[in-house]
Length: 440
Image 1 (cartoon, one colour):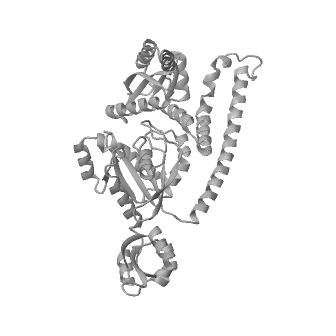
Image 2 (image 1 turned 135 degrees about the vertical axis):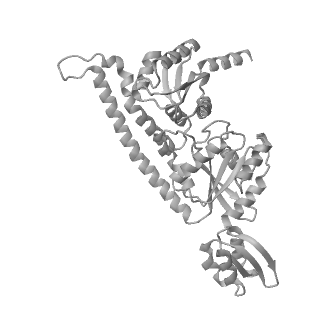
Image 3 (image 1 turned 60 degrees about the vertical axis):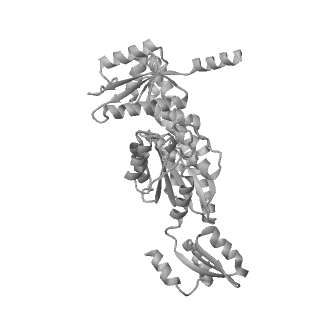
């Protein structure tokens, strides 16, 4: 036990210690900047970085050299020195020049939200495509920042006019190597995407309705997938716990099968280079028949997070796909907050994945949403053709069923693609009017 305690203490000591710096401005008001600073702290925790302290600065005029003015720069540098931190993390984009100046001025590692998120993605990407996309984002981010790694070598420039010093030679070699690797990765990604397209065509031969779980990071998407399908997807109380899409089969109450996909969580101010890293999981959302938008009832910024999610869905062409809005974590939210949310968002469902409250209602809503646009049919299926009955019950939604000595009579909703196969079993009485009524 004594040795274990020493090991835990050593692990704690080895963690990177950071000072976080938030930035309020005319564009980002103080409260929003504080909320983003909280989110930055959660991102740091996800990566295993220990947040020692936080500072919020008011940015009136941007300094090309340091982002903030000299007085604020002195204040931040003094705080970093007094706290003995290893790094300073800005919740604002730093240019390569600003990053280089800060590291030279403080003697600390200095980076921004973009680099922090890229590091998280690098640590958590599992699939080949996600790993390639993250590596590409890392290289694209690093390319304009190469020079700050060779400051000392660059000062060694000498010789005849027009010749290059050892620092410049090293810099050019590294730049060429990075550009070569970027080209390689793009070629590899094309091959990966072609293979994924082939797999997608194979799936489409046996069409099964698909739903994608979307929402802000840490809203409980993976936990919802686990609860609905008894999957064992990693579900942690951390941002970006899941990066790679996971698909599981869900058997609905009336026999219909649904493919349910957990997608990566959205977040504000995502680095542009990482948008491509979302491609695989976002395609699952843009090609789904139904979206399950999960929101966190316990988060005071839930409305902002929902707006971020909706904006991203519109950007990827998924804005018009039918959605079910699910308010999760109602077991730890104030009842009044839940009630106000449900009044504001009519049709939303309140659930707790942890306790199971509201989950049966969600399953029923999934069944209803998937079949709402399907044509209503009335069938008479002889007992000898029981395989047709099984097909209808498996892929359609049963409305009414009764039996006589010769056949099974079924009123149900079925996918359009089944209609040609069911033509011989459609009853003449009431068929046209019921179908037309359902379609109108």
